[in-house]
Length: 447
Picture 1 (tube, helix red, strand yellow):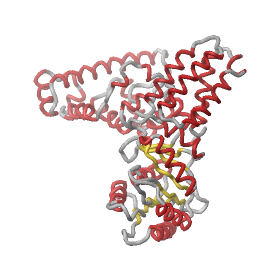
Picture 2: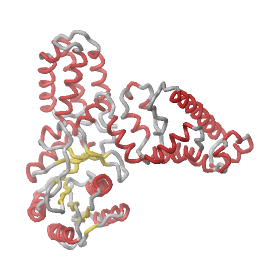
Picture 3: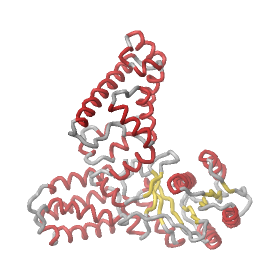
């Protein structure tokens, strides 16, 4: 996971200073030495590190910390604020043209994931912002680039504008914008050609497309895994083309996070979105403050809540709470909840968003793969309707039949039945507590 090494180092350093009643300049100096090393190891640009350490040091030995009642916590607050500022301060919103369509040019080197990101962004605009995007296949050089975008469009049920690979990208972009106006599309996303490295021909063509399509945004797609190279690419594109924002891909991979922390300072252009996985909905708006909290081990509750709100059906949640109160919760309900949790994304990723998750022993070793969840689903689906409602009727021969039908072992069936029974007992206790008014407004599991 991105930032893992950096997060561990910074959290360890912060832990030493957190509870201190008094802080000396020597303490701050020692802490800053550790912070500097952690950032450099994470592949953060040297000049950016120097500037960051200077700002934090100045504030950490200033009045706001020294005269504070809890100087240790105050220093942490300073680090978090400066880390947030380093990544852009606040979330940068996507542009909206006064007269539709809003035109977005997607640019970047080959292999950064530009075409896939174009599809993901269109999907996000439709799902989250209720917009009507048009995808434009303007990469005529890479074999199969047009086909790839058309396949993505088909997969997402989104229209793709293409004139094949014999028409110039400039002409394709021009005609695509005209078509978008005719068909009342809100957004036009132009997938331009990438090269293996920056060259004059590529830049010349991109400048022509820019001149003709007059884009509201020029998003540079960079691979976070390339570290410092990503920053250099961003600088070059910005100087030649004047980008308006960056989309960082593969931030879920084994990256050191340096690009995310350097790009804003070096280019003075915001990170707009981050790619956090392979799936077509794995693109998120970039929130500097939330990312800073995650790096410092404070969790990212807001993103967790947003994921839950986007994927959990409110009516069904109320119905489920009622079932839990009245103890009529069945394996069918459990199966439905499992489906909703699965839609929120990988469970191990969700756990990492919780505050203090970094201190939970063994969390980094937890790997909840879809296979395990599929086993649970298969076991439940192999039960009869009556068994799902009355699991206490499942005797040894029935367990054997369920294991065979689900392609699992009797041990797995036994484990699930025990977990379900334990969960029902816990619900009973929680319902009792609510009844006595001890835990007013408490939410149940899977809510």
